[in-house]
Amino acid sequence: MMKFFLLALRFLLALMQRLLYILTFGEWAPFACVVAVIRDGEKILMVERRDGNGWGLPGGHIKQGETAEAAARREVKEETGLDFEILKILGTLSGKRPGIWLHA
Image 1 (cartoon, rainbow, N blue to C red):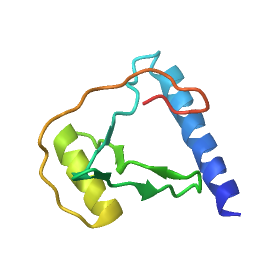
Image 2: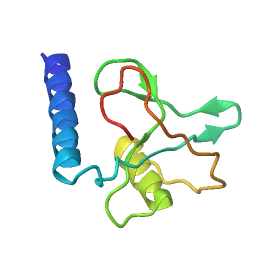
Image 3: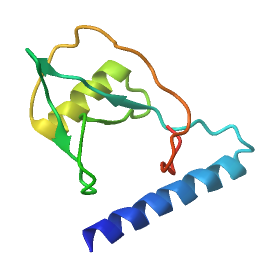
């Protein structure tokens, strides 16, 4: 039941994004997201995905007016309860991925 709910929510979000894209004549920006790679020696912190599709890095969407660094700290705190220090930015990734409905 929870998996169906999450799929329905993803579908509605994708539909809403496409509708706003059409209404703004293609000028509506895609979502911006962050993930954090938190290491302790050779170990990397992973979180169990809410949709039941395994494990992933902690992260999420950047809110309006928020920096990527602040979003990473907020998302990690929300998902794990941990505070951490950002040492460096590893890189950026953009583009569509197979199986993902929302473009981030």
